[in-house]
Amino acid sequence: MPKIKAEAKLVENVRSIASNTRAHSVVCDLPAAAGGSDSGPTALELALMALADCGVTIFADVCKKSNISPGKVEVAVEADKSPDSPLITGVTMKVAVSAKARKELLEGAWRRTEANCPVLFIFKEPIPVKIEFEAKQE
Image (cartoon, rainbow, N blue to C red; front, side, top):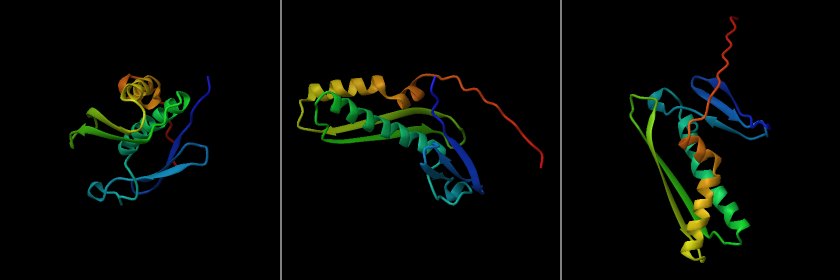
């Protein structure tokens, strides 16, 4: 099975650089109030950004394959999270589409988007995570 790869490396303090091994990278950091320098999104914010973008990208692809002009597409994602817990307790995905296509066609395209958005699956269904930890003393 092909693998999708990503990695992150600590730069300084709590700032890191995450990359996809295809020459794309993003700086992640904590807000100043949490001890960071606020030079990029947190990992959780990046995950929510990925969810929003997956919705936009897959919807555009579904529309393209269905000969539908998607028009203007915006997806906003909000997560509920207590400040004293690492867990998010809920996610709301708000989708706004403004197009010349019939509403029924756009709704059908969105249903196909939900059925094919890999990032949405990560949020909706538990996925086994295998952790391999190695520590070396310098």
